[in-house]
Length: 190
Image (cartoon, rainbow, N blue to C red; front, side):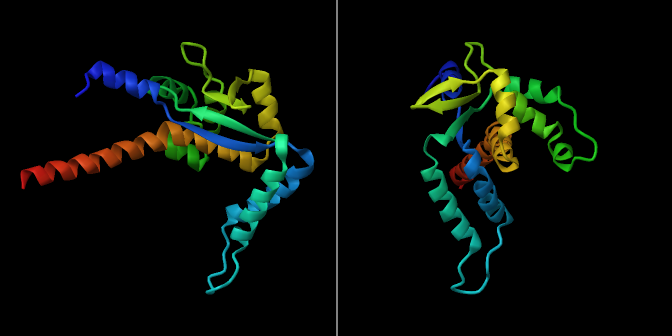
């Protein structure tokens, strides 16, 4: 059994990451957005044997991304320490009449934009670009330019990745462990 200090160090060292592909080829962006809209709509034909437009669109999107070459970049996001995440979100008040903000209790969009630019105590950013397998930091002006150039779908992918790493994933992990240990404890009593 490991010590409390060892458990803390292991958790801090194993922060989860999530990669988000982004297409920067201007001539391909419109087609990518069209395919993403079909996928996001999720319309499928309920008839047995009918070809789903979503499946077709995903196949076309996969081919498009493969053909995009260096125009396709990968952004990698790392889960922030809980203290930093709560500090950030507590500074971003809910926007009036914005249901997602009211649901999470802070400005959902601003949290993602600010989180990708945060750096840890050692200067390592929580949002980076991957180039030849290496993590490359972006400065504040590059993040602004990137968010300005991206489609709504891509910005939503980033926003959802950041939220998923810092809110959803930890919640799911705790719930899963509670179920596991709850079942184990109940079995031990019987």
